[in-house]
Image 1 (cartoon, rainbow, N blue to C red):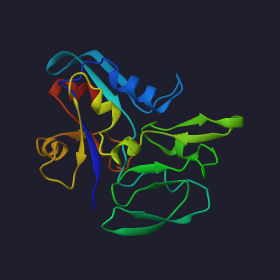
Image 2 (tube, rainbow, N blue to C red):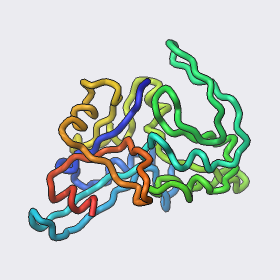
Image 3 (cartoon, rainbow, N blue to C red):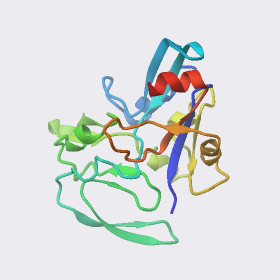
Length: 213
């Protein structure tokens, strides 16, 4: 099975917001919300001296996403196929794709209750207003629509510093796998449990210190 993941190289990130702006424009994200956002750490003192770190953030597509089991929508069987294999699982209005690991939302079945938004420890979801005031949960889906046409996520494609890398962790030769082998780290959920984030960060000690502290 594939597990798509992203690695951000903090050494390269310029803090230019190109990733966030490209995402917002492509997916028509409201001005006050975000699928991809930039968090600035510092300037602050670290054991390695004064430093600043720029950290792009988005849905972490967790191994065990806390947002999925809280969805109150009645589950239905859903088929997943890639031309080679087919899997059927029971899903509510949000689920983790068993073939690629992407956490998805069905805007048609979503009732806009906000349970998944509250359950996300990374604050990566928001409620998007639609026609007649109907709200649905929205978030990063690694640009699944583009992936299905052979393109990469818009944040990666528009990164001016080539600091964002996307790929399959099941492929040991992928860029994301090589970064993990070199020591890329992921964020703690800060809840006492680890849902298994699939967004990783690589950087110098001072950048990681600011991000993780």
